[in-house]
Length: 167
Image (tube, rainbow, N blue to C red):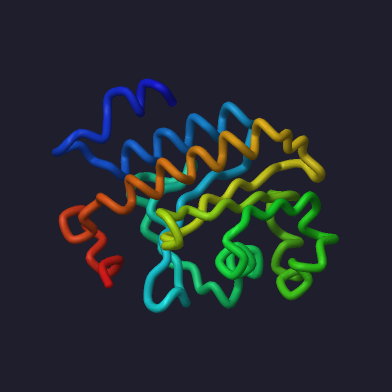
């Protein structure tokens, strides 16, 4: 993770590859099923995953937020959300049937914001239920979300092959 941050994010570098490498390293470090960065667009009805630990950069798949109650909750509150067991959590009830076939059992979602402007979310998916989410883990994820927010704010979506992110 340090080498990806240390050698990247300079003019002319591929931001998406750098972000994907940071997420992949973090995923291995924390034994996550997946770690993804999604930016909001189209009136915050959709989110575009621009980097994911398990996808070639840029990831570029679209999420309909109507199908992701955990993302909507973080968007509405602006606060991180931890779901220790997705099969039992009331917030996930509307998508419980879909979750039965998924490999992840718990998740955490962190707002990616600059000031009061919510740009997206950092999503961590855990293999096991009730993962240990220490105060230090939350701090590290919030720090990553702030750094990713600053980076997302400076990225030029038109130059990066994601022209539909520009609003």
